[in-house]
Length: 442
Image 1 (cartoon, rainbow, N blue to C red):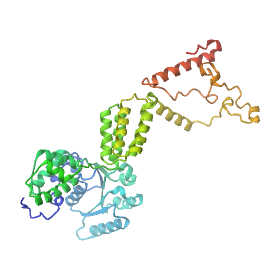
Image 2: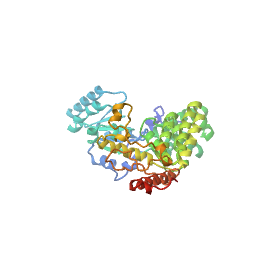
Image 3: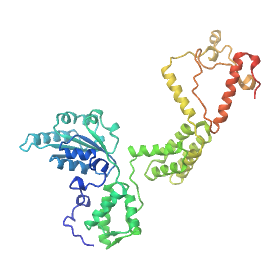
Image 4: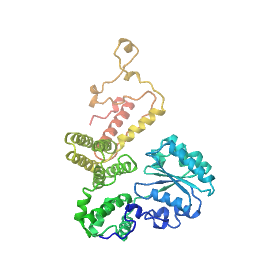
């Protein structure tokens, strides 16, 4: 396969790097005609901003194009490797550019800005406010949580999206136009796009591997079987501690709550396939059983707990089957958050309420003095009462109205629980009117 490009010695990513805004692939929701970031470029007035998006979607490229568009000095800082010294150096370079003969603007680009701590982020504030430089931060994490509010208030936030299939295919076509890649059959192309998973950098690195490997093997057409051999087991990009992680666990939880076993199973496998710790998944599954199924089907708690124990006994991959079946059971089980809501209501009530004394008849009386003080006096032992229920007895602090924390839902076992509570309330009401009105025990 010939290599006609005189720049063939350069990395493929550099050869395909956009030289103008028009060459950028994807992100048309912010870069298209009339869109906010495009308007910022066209205004001729740079402003501080934060580019938020997953890896490989063009954050660094956009920042570099911004510097070129405004004829600005471009200073790049990695928050992973850099520190306060790098910030000081950037300030000095910006001052030199501002005060020099050319009076050049400066754009300071901070990659992975969320890795800087609060004091490091604060170091940018006075210089952003004075206009010494334009600050551009790139982050894969939600800036609402990871960027100081003071810095966030001085920067526009642009959300970048993973590249779509058509966008990634454009990159492949550009590589082929540079003769950096041979012809590729459609099945192989689709697998390649799926492997990239919206990440242009991952796609470019893969294309470069294919370029070298195909050249050495004399491959003139990439077929799916050969591509599988080169790529090995497909591994999707997965951030085990970031925004995508919590979005995916949220999707799993909501699919279980929404009684969709297929969706729940999909998100579970997505997480396991991406490297999520199965023990973490087991804990979340147990939580789902208690929060969203509750007493509507108490078996759900046992199945979730047993699945967690099974994983501990078997490990991967056998133990993951138990987690999968627990998720399926939870998804199809009757749903109730009545216990969860009751607990939250009780917590909120106790937090704002005063410390009410325990009624005397409910107090323990282990000593003679306590008995003389009427601790435990007139307490009715429920097992000695008709039907094992002391009708009319009060178990709340004196003067406290029934709060009604727990309201069973009309689903699963809680149908019977609700009926039982209705019966007990009726017996309490009758006992308060008089003992002769108490209905016989059902």
